Amino acid sequence: MASQEGPETVAFGEDGAASEYLQSLLKPGERVVWTGRPSPSAFARRDWPMASWGALWIAILLVAAWFNPDDWKAEALFFLALCAAVAGWLAVAPLRNALRAGRTYYAVTTDRVLILRRFLGWGAVGIRPTEFARVTRYDMGDDRGSVRLRFSRRGSLFGWAMHLSNLSDGLWGIGDFRAAMLAIHRLMAGVQA
Image 1 (cartoon, one colour):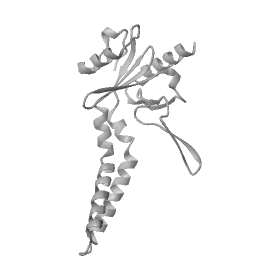
Image 2: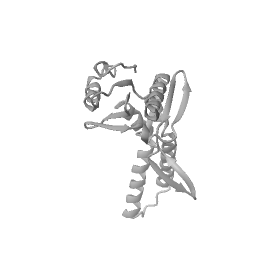
Image 3: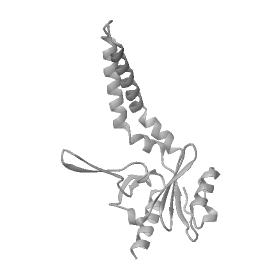
């Protein structure tokens, strides 16, 4: 999580594979301005509501199993098993996201913001300043924070417009927040100038 002056000094701590992958994504003349990693606890906190729903469904299933009639049909047992699988999936959502944070890397270059992920190979999402929509910062104190750069999903609920974001729409739970925001503001100013 350090500022970088050129692509030859790009580093993600001890993960050389991430640095090599970032190097392969850079275009001629593109420089890395800032690199960082998300906090696993910040990623995990995003899905506590899902975990609460999962815990609620597990409790409902336990009550249903407690009052289990002896003549339940196979369809009912299949439905209970399916609900148990969904409830378990929801209940472990924070753990899944904490593990995802360990495979995520962030970089701000002179041309774009890059979000790199490693899962069965490397993948990257690039966000150009022209794609930024209502940049929102969440300052958590102690030079920690998150910044949402865009909304990837839109919808409505009871006629109210909803703008939703996912993990590929910003930099979440970063520790070097001031330096990241400075790099993003410089990137935005370069596009507007």
